[in-house]
Length: 417
Image (cartoon, rainbow, N blue to C red; front, side, top):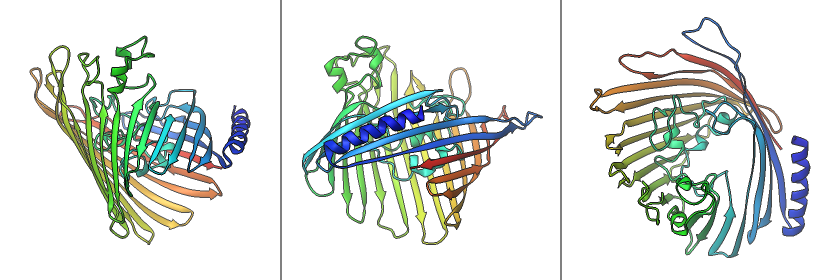
């Protein structure tokens, strides 16, 4: 399969090179395993086996007037709570045209992200370490849940998935228009054109055809202003269908985001993000959402061997079907010591709290989770990275339950070409 992908992408890159005059071709192979695992309730130590592998090949082509990117990826994933599925094959790509400096249009999918505002607290916090499974994954939901009503998604899932920062387009099939009226200012309008957005199953034929007003109601509007040598201001609105023809079918109008990334300080940077989920009343006349998310991140990039990152997030307020939603608090730290250019040591750790409000059936209570995850990065050769570490964690601790302490010994390779 990998040889076929390479052959196909090589042909596509050559065609793109002829068509656009410039082309680049590359790829990566990621393999992550769990060598050993267990918990304090088990006498036996288990071998976890392969957790994640992905072969990805990409071709970028074009110039500043127009071009695009094509990506083919295949692999398996059991590390991220089924996030990518087992035995997946994914292809995505996009094309763009910029006839003048003040305007650009793009169509397709950019799964590596368009317009996402998190500079520290998103994917880049542990970056490729999570793909090799050395670092606990932002994608994994300990105990289940989802981004709308996260039932114990501790770790950084709220931060990573946009609770405090505008998450951008992600895997959304869309057409977007970007305007650059003055230096440093960018305005982005995103319109979904596929069936892979929030309420596709509520309209049309199996979500494959949408009423025009409903599709437009899922638009995203993003405004970025880069203040030279100071920071980046970012505000956004993400529609959820409440402005469409189908607005009576339990759809919120959308979410509001605002963030600021400070880059004026030498050797360090910081960011703060805000998110407000607009309240609404669903078809059953029950009050929904109205929550607020607040996040902050700091990064120390000294000229010496030591660096440090921290991120924190709180989600509070809101109702779901008339019941108060839990208050969620998360914090992660990530100090790093560069022993030399080829060997770096990290200590990833975090704490999460979920404060469950009182209901008619039960009193209020708090659940706590924690993890400690030291790991190392080794530059094995040109293009080859090796990762290994130890993951120790305990989740859902409360007054009644004390779950076992779980542990894993992962290792993985990342190869880039």
